[in-house]
Image (cartoon, rainbow, N blue to C red; front, side):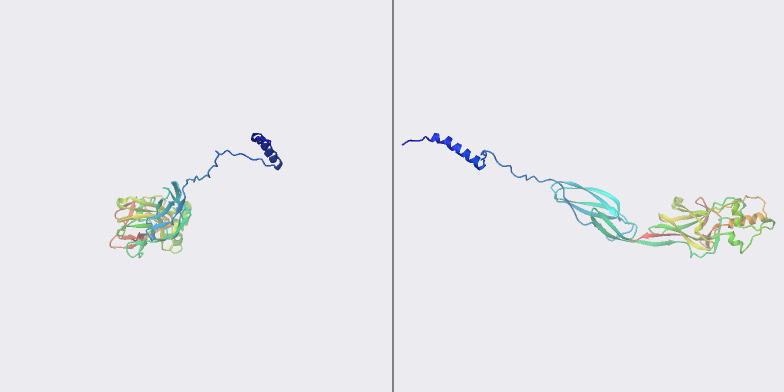
Length: 349
């Protein structure tokens, strides 16, 4: 029996396997036993992740003019510290900004302080958080005056027609001293009782005869010498320090007695304070050392034409004077208290 060598059969087997692979279209791939597959990527990104608590306001209720605190808690649920920029909006307007840094897993507060001057509803917003806050008015109205306000007469120019030297320049004013209530108060307006003394109006009731039998009244003189349409109000504190000065138009008054309120910016006063009204009733007739009836009539009529007349009441205890540049002029109208008042408010608790 013939023996076939095993070694001689191995090449034949290899040839058979290759031929089989070519016939079937499959080619085996050998993978080295030392090669391993890459593990999946398990890396986690590091970034802050902010969450927000509702906005808090304290103290409540919010009072007009008083400071209150606005707080919103910011938490960081991420894996890295981050800085959050908080923009505070009130009624849609940006009023403040603040940056707060929050560590991972921690919380921090954004805190603002603000005041609101107008009572009612206001919307406070930080980011996407909003809060409707109701502001309560704590202002207690205050009116400060002297006497009962009864008008006994009117001073048209803070001068006397007998003062010939004052014909060309009448810059004096009407000054009154008032006293703030305990704790002081804030002035928001000045009330003046008076009227415009217009000789065009008076002419129809009490005609004035000028020289050479001619009728002379305000409108005639005004064509040649225009009047000043304005007047001023000054407010002084202690030691006559000027707290406010404002200019207004005489057209606020009419030829009928009325009380006019002049708005002023909020002015805080305490103790005694002074209000001065400068009517600017400035006749421009030339002064004369010789008195004559025609001159007197022309002067009086021109003084009457569109002159601001400040009302007064007679008083035993006088706190009003004629003034010049904020200082009292002695020996003028010693029994008059001008009808000038201060309007404002005190703030309650």
